Image (cartoon, rainbow, N blue to C red; front, side, top):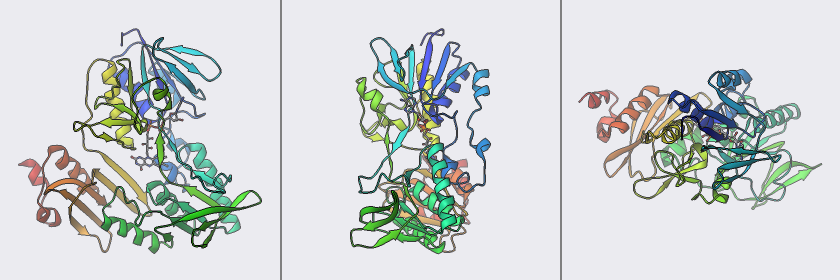
Length: 413
Ligand code: FAD
């Protein structure tokens, strides 16, 4: 992109905002416009299911960047603006309301949309997904109503967002049922042992957990969901249903403009699409790996790193994102920190005391090599794991499970 060009960023979330800043810090002196369809400026999503929903932090702490900060960097933030279409031939965007905006470089950072369930009663106004601040405000209001009227909460989906909301609702003293269709919690991301550990954690906090859940419908009364009814006829009364059943990448604009998409906008490790003027970053992408497979990650780290790569690519300085993926989740007083991707692991080693649950890490191996480490209240293990994985250093399972063995010594070597 020419130095006096105009880079337009669609999506003012984690990835979009950080791309704008990385363009400036990378030396771009042209115009930058950051477009977001939400009424709010850029904010952090992770607290929406955790500390913010629990009322432990306020709106000020949600803010990712103050609009004045962006203005100081010469980044024009426009909120409440939806991009309806893009035309790659004329290099223009059509905004809702009819305005046309020309770009010389384009960043797609449109995030993802929570899935709904095609259930009878699934569109009642107290059946709520959680993605945006407005979603979280609606859930907070519904939780308050449940507390007032002593109504239970049903969470559909035992993934991170569902379980975090369940933990937050328990903290508020509400009765909570979690319905998970799979035989275990967090089945796509955790080892069976850790899934069982999380199930025990939630049950110990009084959550009613239903695995292999088969939902038939949601019954309503006066227009509001009043019970989730299972295929076997069991009824779970509710004043609120929270949907935590995953997201779909917002790749519609890109697909309509002829860019390759498959469960997300396909990008390379540098965030590039096949169009040299267009890059993409964050939850809207699917990254093509060297072996040809596609990797979809939905995390702050992924959005942040892809943002830096996408900005660098537009500035003609390719910077592949190859660091070990990491993620975290807070439930009750337990902080899970994950490094690497554990899918396909065939052996595990545990460091620390998993039975007491105070602090421990699970080391995942495939073909004898360390591929991922999940740590619970063990921040030091987590930071070390990222270093080990980045460096391709693999402790033996015996070393990993021996808490007297200094894993850091392997790095020094
Ligand atoms: P987003 O932050 O979703 O930003 C995309 C923006 O683009 C949105 O504002 C969207 O409205 C806007 N947009 C879309 N289409 C258009 C359009 N056509 N025109 C204009 N604007 C548009 N990650 C972690 O690593 N750890 C956690 O603990 C964690 N907890 C989470 C808890 C919750 C409740 C949620 C929802 C997410 C959590 N995540 C967590 C995931 C993390 O927040 C996301 O991976 C990250 O926000 C992705 O950033 P993004 O910029 O790609 O997408």
